[in-house]
Length: 285
Image (cartoon, rainbow, N blue to C red; front, top):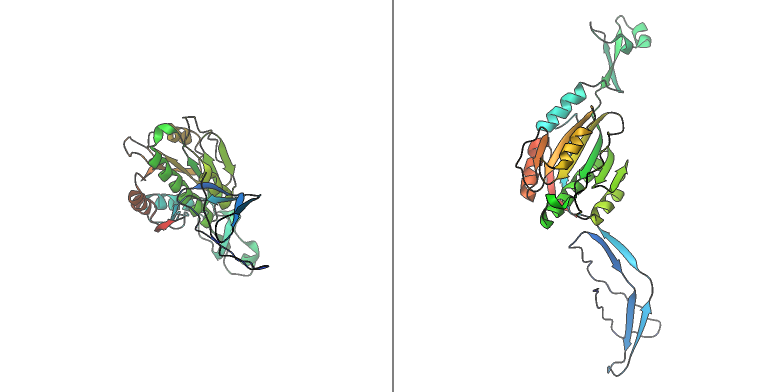
């Protein structure tokens, strides 16, 4: 229920006008407008006539989120940024960068024989190391992990990570609780799911081994570092994936993973910047 009342001045025959009001966007989720009820009154208020204009319109209010940046493996000076960079440098690259002279110990398969034939020295192909290519964002929606305020913060944190992965052109996967698993998804599809998600009874998140080539980052947004969701994510972590835990209720408990403090908005911004060595911007919606 609810709505908005709009008043229009008397109109002459064949005259038209328009009216507007501000969209109530204080909460995420779907807002349905319509049907419209039109009421006409005479100037003295002695008679009135009502007409219902059929049809509805739905508007999706996306979750508020911070402008954060993911370390890509080639950039980032924070703890996880440096770790991803070392993992990337340890991988065999696939993108051609330049030619250089052969030195003892180079892989013979990288020799460019055509270029070597035109030179006095053997030439080898220099390739860029593979950086971060995939990102999985998993939102734990178990009611035992959050207060109502804590869950809303968790949704915003997950939305921040989704937006950052899309800006970095990473292959994105979004998991929400036990019922939502969007693979190779888009920004709009992921944010729409987050806009309408809700807290639920505790159920195991059906993690599966990450799919796809290259280095991956698995971000688990949950209440605490010792939640069942973290244990499940660790069990299915692939050999080319790094686990990042974002705790939105408490930082108590031990964890072998990289952990970010999101027990409030200011802590999240500071902890993300320190962990990733990347920029954190203002809240957006």
